[in-house]
Image (cartoon, rainbow, N blue to C red; front, top):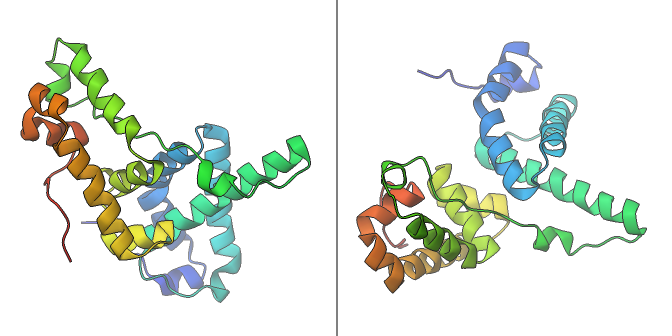
Length: 206
């Protein structure tokens, strides 16, 4: 059973608490960060900066409602700030549109048994193409919800949107995939679940 991370221990600067925090979340943050900025050096530097910032400012930070959401949002902000700074270095102009124009690649689970046993790679290509047609926000929400297991309120916090927006955007993305006639012919709903690594394929309701 995983140990409980105490925010009081974080504030107190206890080494074991910080080590547990890093061990618990570094892989999740790396995967998420690489979706935002596909540069391992930049992402790893941002993760290190994030944990250093927490350590240095720990006495002034309020305990987060969700550590996962807090860390993901903070890392995303660091990466966007880095992309904006890079734009300034290259063009001497601040491009605030960077915060809305970053790419977010959502990939089919190619390790699933369905893909591994499928000789017709065309099916994989078609499914991936349909994922690519989703909006960046739809892909990001699907990734956070189904690949990383965040709750709706956590996703809302990470993306700075309302829970209603998360519900509606995710529902629209899932409905689009479910109603695609080519995907239905190739896979059927059960196979779509495995390809997206979704445990349950349903429409959100409030």
